[in-house]
Image (cartoon, rainbow, N blue to C red; front, side, top):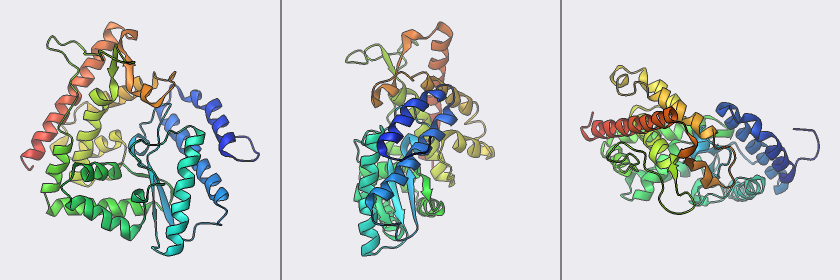
Length: 324
């Protein structure tokens, strides 16, 4: 980025001019998103006009950003962990969280519809209060609490102290080791998978709406791999966030080698298909694929990737049900 006055508007211009350099490079694309968001943090701290942060902190991203699986348009999923639970720190990071969320929106990251943002007090707390929050979620019987725990487990530090996230994830891991019912609640939360393989083996596309004729790539293909692999990562205390990194770590364990055979290859190919969605106008466009643009062999490949994802999902569900 050229030297000059750094503002949300100049960051947005730089982002828009540069991002398509990564149309064939998922790793580069996600690294670029990180660069953009870190520059937003720089501007947000300056705009607060409150000086430097009063204590150590971590700003983390989660969702597809946490897993390094973002497409060309990504919404916001982020939060803050800070060291000191004081009036000064609470006030400072509340203001910083609000500024970050607004700044990211200006730069081109839509507000999270689920409000998973640093501007939401639920996602901006001291580390001690975060520990209490995780325990509340783990002991709660609600579907929403389990969803929040899954979201937190995908968190990756973007700025600040890197060890805070690991310390908090270890709270989840240690709890589920002595409370096996928690893992089954995680399992129950991901039971549903969108079926897009028809009775004759055909791919089923959307029948109505603006995505008529498109394949729902997110819920039919990505979600089974992401959710199943995360569930196994929580069980085994794997703290890496990307689905591929989790697979590589889990494959090192003999008992999962056959279960995950070729899954990393399939998921990597799925990520490459996502890169083809580079001429999109809105965030939801990154989730749907026009299947008619593919050749016969590509359609066959996507169908097999979807089938393998469902197989992985179902086998991990069975494994957790058996208490293995």
